[in-house]
Image 1 (cartoon, one colour):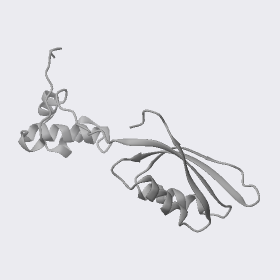
Image 2: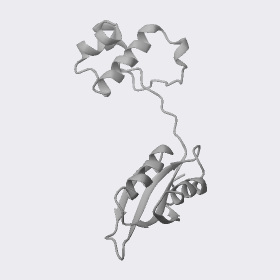
Image 3: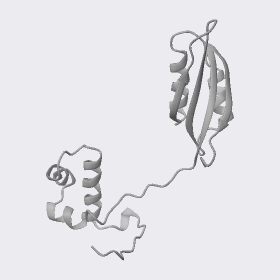
Image 4: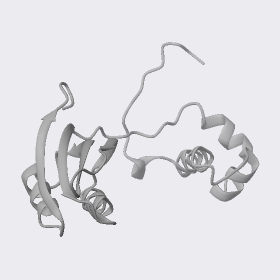
Length: 151
């Protein structure tokens, strides 16, 4: 393989079928849906020789989504399921939780601090906090801050 290779971004609808199927076979292996090259090429309906011919030259392109890493503080009554309801709202809004710290309840009130990724293309942070505050038993949901350079 040449060290001076050029890379291009090409839409899949103009790629030859053999290259698309090679990409599929690699994806099946990466996701562990196929446990061997033999199994992957059978599932992708290509020969092993086609797979080995193209496998080092085709890679998926992932568009980088813009996101922010934010910190929320939630205060809620100490009842079963309160934190799970908050987590369900976060999941429904495509938030990716990095850390979750829940303090010991004092006087029937539990506090949780959640650090998470919030997609720029999803619901606004204000809308997210409003959804959480509308849940039964939630006393407060506050934006604490955001990690630097997370955009």
